[in-house]
Length: 78
Image (cartoon, rainbow, N blue to C red; front, side, top):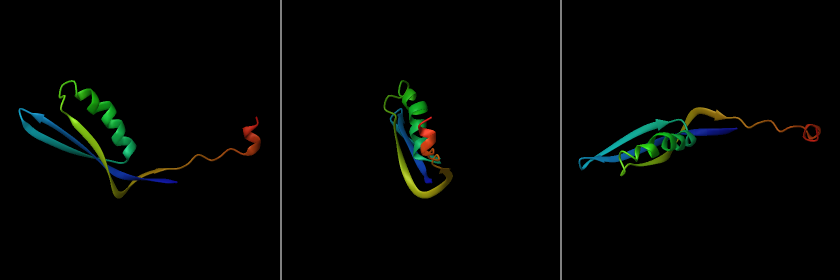
């Protein structure tokens, strides 16, 4: 079983020389990475100086990833 930890996405950018920083709390590093790919990277066409990074916390989230059950040896040969 893998336990996930809350992750903070920090998004920084400038508007008229004013530094703006926004923080989002997400349930996992995977969620943070996905948000960067889906939202932040396309935003760079409008805000080319936008910068984002993920910081893992030590606080467990409720998201638990359970490993898949290994198939029996005879199932592998079928």
